[in-house]
Image (tube, rainbow, N blue to C red; front, side, top):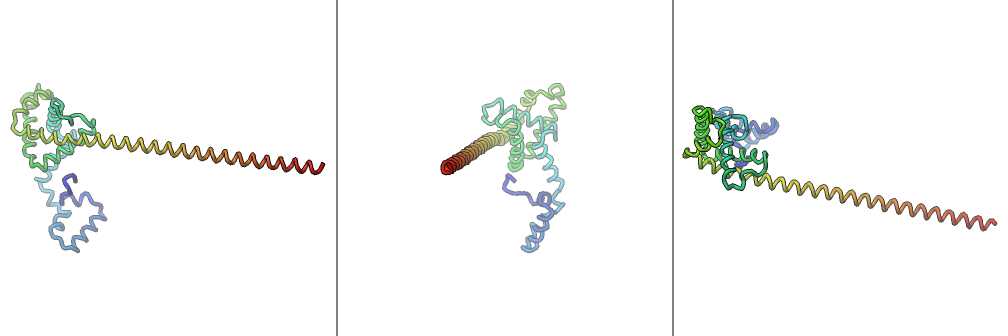
Amino acid sequence: MLSGGIETRHLASVLSKERQELLSTYLMVIDDKFLSQSFGNDDSQGPENVEDDKILLAIIRPGTDASTDSLITCLQRSLEAGVSPFARGGGPGGLTMTRAAFSLLIKFSDMLEDFVSVVDQVQFFKEIEAAKAKDVAAIIAFLKELPQFPAILGKFEQASKMRGWINERKGRLRRDCAKEVEDELLQKKKKEAKEKAEKEIDSAIEEAKQAEATAEQQIHSASVE
């Protein structure tokens, strides 16, 4: 969706049954053979597409593939060790957005093969250097020798700019929330002031009525006497 649309092979899975029927009818009316063939076509989920989706899913979701997670950790640590202003912003949510944006950059920059190659190298390093399998610094040193690593690190840094968006979004939400609370308190105070004023007016009217009644009673008593 961030790329500007949804691939036709995903249309059937993201639309409700009613929308699918409506779209199918519309495609028949306009006689669009290309979309009609693509819509709901199971053949579009070929082995290549499925494999690519698995790679991208491993980038987006931690815990899907251990070697991919290790590479992401190395990329993150490399940014933190540098001068990138986007390395730590946004907290855990920032890293989530970074991974999602990174998957898009890898896909649409035609770098899936390079990414898979580096992931395989991470797995290879862990196998031959079992004692250093959890040593992030050692893995980074190994990755720096790979020709694909600088470009992948550059894409990860670009994706990390989403952290700035997260911080900006959080700040906007905080300001909106604070304004909403302030407006609510102001309205509450205005309502309380209005109710208090109305009570005071009612009380004054009641007192005036009582005074008037007392005066009439006194006049009546005086006239009787």
